[in-house]
Image (cartoon, helix red, strand yellow):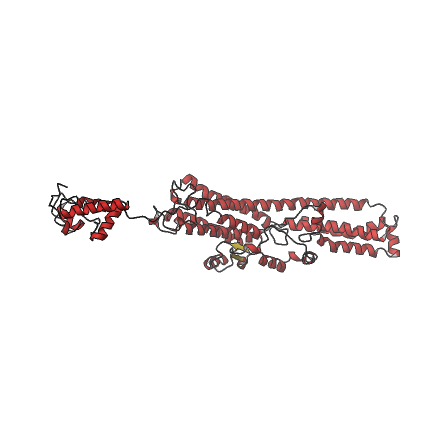
Amino acid sequence: MIYYSKGWHGLKILLQSSGALWPHGILPGLFSAGISLAMCVEDADTWVRSKETFIGHPYVYRLMAVLLGLAIIFRSNFAYQRYWEAADALQKMAAKWLDGALMGIVFDAGGDSTTPLLHGADWMRSAGPHPTTFHKGGPDHRAFFKDIVHLCSLMHGLAMMRLRDDSNMDNIVTAENYARQISCLGKQVTRFADLQQSLSASSSFYGESLDRSKRSQKIAVIGGLRPEERKALENDSQGNPLPNCARVSMVETWFMRRLIARQKFEQGESAATDPPILSRLYQVISDGTLWYGVACKSAQIPWPFPHANFVEVMLWLFTVMTPFIVNNNIVPMSLRLTISFAIAFTYHTLRATNDVLEDPYIPYGPNDLPLPAWQHSFNMRLLAMGPVSDEEYIPPLPVPDTSAAAAQVLESLAHKGPEGKSLDKKLAEVARETKMAKSKAAEVLEEEFSLNLPTPQAHARNGHANDSKAKGKPLKAGCFPCLPATIGASFVGPAKSHDDT
């Protein structure tokens, strides 16, 4: 498919040779002009121009020209309908499969009230275990995103190969850096090589030329084709080659299996999605497969042979008859040759246009649907489903809370005694001068006086093992038996019972 520039009163289109099909009418036009030239010899010319012995009136020729024109125009209309229907089915197929991939990714993404767009696939949060369903196991959201885009890209790529009748798995490449090799915009430059290729008539319709075109227009897949995937896609269980249509169905099965496995057995948010909403995920994938079947209609069903054969017979009869009728009515030789060439050239060019439009997927030339470029566009849309516009908020590393430990130290220093009073004053002084929290001041005191801040311990110890009232209670600095475990034995104050605490 060519995106061409309009302007200069049509001169831009006239001077562009790439994709032009008029060269296909040159040889038939020259053939008709050659017959006209051969009829210019004296005896033949006299016989052809005689109204009594040859053709008295060109009515029959006009009728044949009208019938042939109607047949070609009829074929042109339906050829364009096939071309347009193929493009429409491909776009709808891609849209539905993209919807399925989108739902599979979004339904699995984590989030909370602070992330209105959920977690992006490129976020660090998506590269770790799910906070609530991590116990199920399975890959994290980022790895699941990669699985989905790979399988969806592979399914679409194999569909492209099926439509252009390409069974060579070597024509699948990894999507990385392949975009530069694709002429997505179809901006063609007029070159002599393009004109020379066009002058080769219908050589591009044959097998070897088609194989070269397919090898030069590879299908890019995100993640490429893995060895185990290629092994499963090339042959069946009996070792027989697998047809293209079965390959697409196989990858679609992998796609569905991956989504179901995520929902049933792995971590993520898929299982938390309401069933009526989750069912839409599988419905749109099924709709995409339906449009893939519609697209296959133009690839599997050629233009009816009886009509194509009849048009070719009529066209070549018309090509041979044209110079006789022209010579019968026109005397100047230059006009004879020009008109004979122009008539045959016009009809054969229209027929060549029909041949190209009837097969929109086969890479005959630049006029066919750009399947590699559309595959690249499909890949870009898949990859665009991962990032979100919100920036990821990375919370600072948590600071250990020592307020409880500092409270226990303060409580232990509340005992009467010179050591306790000294430490109590020192703690207040440090907190006041440095304007730091009491917990931080307690850490300073710990370093200066070699205090051991208390750590969470079971209360049933150091004399409490046989005390039924102490069992299950937290460690307290005010309890006499607990003091050796909190601030050390050297700072033990007056004994107090546990009930007093």
